[in-house]
Image (cartoon, rainbow, N blue to C red; front, side):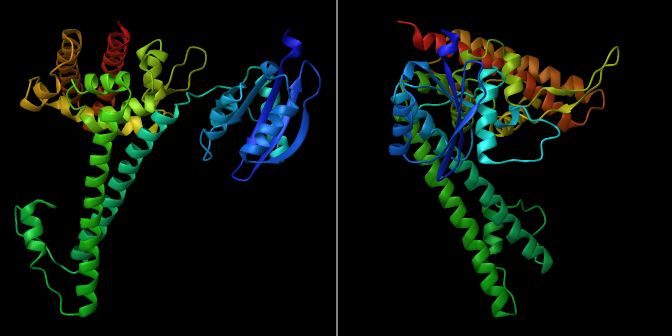
Length: 372
C-alpha cells in the first residue's frame, strides 16, 4: 500500500505553482508549472487521480491557506509545512521553482517536513482583524514618534510633569505655534496622522468585539476563560486564541513555550552545557502579548474590579489557576530582581512561566466547552 502513495510537492507563488511527484522508491520527477488558479489546480488533481493515494504539501507563505482549503475540499490530503524547517544542503547554490518542488516532494516522502497548524476560514478571518489592529498600533507608534521628535527638534517641550499623550498633553499641543507656515503645516499633518491612527484603532477594536461575539461557541469560551488571568484582557486573549488555535494540540505546556519562542537557546556538547537568550524562533505575535501581560505580575496578588468582572461566568477551576498564577509569577519576578537580574530578563522568565498557566486555562476551557 505504501508504494501506491504519491507524494506531491508544490512550490507555490502568486501566479504559478511548480509541481513535482515522488512515487514509491522511484526518482522524483517534475510535472512542470501550472497557473495558481482554482481551475488549474482542479485539473492537476484530476490528472493525478486516484485522489486517496495523493499526499500534497507546500510551504507556508504569503499565499495563505486558500490552496489548502481547495485541496481538502477536493478530497486530497494536504499539509502546509514550515519553510524554516525544510532541509537545505549546505553546498547547494542553485535555486529554482522546479528544484524547490522536487525537494519538497522528496523530503515529504522521507518524512523530513514539519507541518504547521492550519486554521479554518472563520478562524483565519478573526486572526486577520486582530493582526490588522496590531499593525495599526505600530503605525500609531510611528506617527507619535514623528510628532514628538519634530517638537523636540524645534525645542517645543510640554510643561513639567505632563505625561505624553494625555489630555493635558493634547491641550498643550493645541497651543504650540511656529513662526513659519511650513512648520505649522507639518505640525498639523503630524497631529492629524496621530488622531487618524487612534480612530483607526478604535474602529478595529469595535470590529474585534463584534467578531468575537459572532465566533464559534468553543472559541468564545476559551477567549472568556483566558481573561480570568491577570494581564490578559480581551485583545490579548483573542490574539492568543487566534494564533494558537486549539491549546489541546500541545501535549505539554513546554511545547507551547517553544511555539512562542520563549525557551532558552542552547549550544551543548559533551559535558559542556551552554544556554543563552530565548530563541525568538516562534510566533512573534504570541511572544509580544505574553511579554506585555507578564508586566502585570510585578504587582502584589489581588483581585481588582476589572479582573473580577472578567472572571464572572468562568469555572472555579479556572479561577483557582488564575489565583495560583498571581502568587507564583509575582514571587518569581521579585526573586529574580532581588538577585540583580535585569527587569526585562526577569519579565521574560515570568512570561515563559505564564505560558504554562495560559496552557492550563486553555485546555480546561476546551474540555469544559466540549462537555455535554
